[in-house]
Image (cartoon, rainbow, N blue to C red; front, side, top):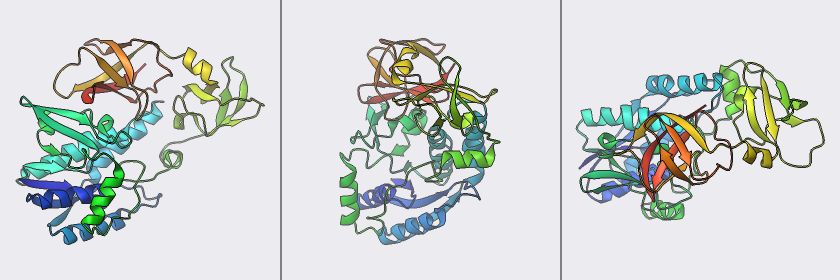
Length: 347
């Protein structure tokens, strides 16, 4: 097959390219250039150089695809608008949907690609003509949560070669075996394409953020925060408490108009948690979920049993949730190891 591989300069995508080339596929390495904030240091030039070196070492052609305009419009603008509205968006979901398996996939197919491949820790298996999205074999690295918007159209054109790797250490072992120049490169963390970004710093540079009061559940002022829009429900750091309280406090609510956040102990967080929530922007990998279904309302969050999902997006759970899901986050559904799709939490 002719496979275009999204190469970020990291270990995972580099091993992906090497594995596919070893199997005899016609591989083309592609560095996807995103949008990068001017006021925050970024390593994209170094990452591109690393990807180029890997492609040369493996022996595959290499090119750069500039998706900065797409990324700014689809991901960054949405991210800023959602925070302004008091919600906590999931930019990696949009990055996968609109950039990696949207603009990049369309571009690659237009240039003769049979498939595109990335270094995601997830699996795709065809069963009875249906392409099923499965969790990655390594539960600590599984990224299926961020891929729930993929449909049959995209899944039929994607390969995740390292999704079946049981441990990240095995990927690095493969990188050493291929003698890849990035075998010892540390993992990247942070916002898709941008890397490690302090969200408070990023938002402060793009939105007017001002300090405000921290309230307890009775409405009393007990501290100060850096700006209500930068906090998410369940957060337990980043605000100052002026009273002596001998237990951790979590964000229970926030009021963007009044610029306040309300905090409380873990027991209050559980007491206020819902038994049902509503989602919009629903999308399914191949079928509307029925039967024995579980869901996750944040990445690496607890897996909770689902009682029912209505066509209108009302989701009831078997038990009260252990915490309050943040509005704007993704609720992703699973049947066993298979990811079935999901939607965005709304209140």
